[in-house]
Image (cartoon, rainbow, N blue to C red; front, side, top):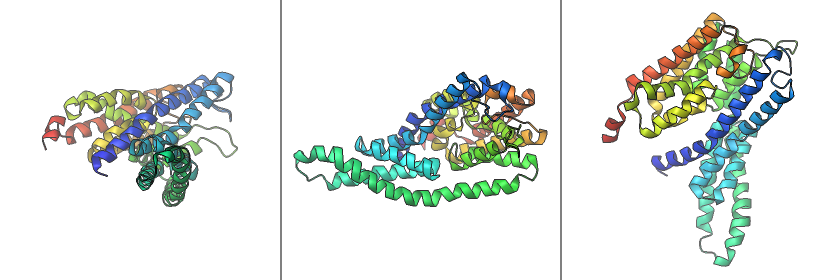
Length: 347
């Protein structure tokens, strides 16, 4: 499988799963916004019927993210017989702790296994078509893929635990360093296990020793930093349009909304197209934003950032200013380091 084919299959999955992230993230943000008066309670986000419904609906959409990603990568590789195996991969990766990276690895494995089965069964008479479609591909394919996911989860899931342990030890140190590390981690794999580890660590700091909800510097730092991830890519397409293809300029429009909504995955198309430039740029921008927020004690009392939880930030002007600075740093780095899109095609 060549690089272009890998890119095409990966982008197929990404294009289908991004709407789930956007819809889920925005609905969850609305839930906390409509429940802002109860930000200090254990039921924050679900204290009234409207916010509880929004929270539940958003969480359901977000929960479908990995199965949809895995399903449509495998579908792109092996056509319709690959869909079920890919969806199962996403569910196993989600429940097994290997997350985004585990889903991608498993989905490519699923597509490969289904294609092998298709090749092995090619010589069977046409009368077996129904058996292949309804029994062999779904049952045998799912069993083989599930066995493969045992190894993938065993390898990838411990990475999350290692990263969490690292963060726990760092939390007693300098808040600016913590903010920079959380920001860089949030951008490192744009929604993958490292990103989720940083997020979950920050969410854990929202709960006090007595179980009550408390404003968190860690959550404020990662929320400030997150503006630079998708937002940095979006701003770069506006400031430096010649550096990006038409497809990426279009992706920048969606990334604008995601950047404002605490959704990192808007940067994925840019990272896939220019990983050596975009990843360092968004990590630097996010680290700058997170460090400034940590240094000045920006706190947030909701487990999600973006513009929808602005009422829950202790210093709104600095929150927005530092988010804008990080976003600008990421965008300018991309503009300085990327060649023009037309020049790149000639190479």
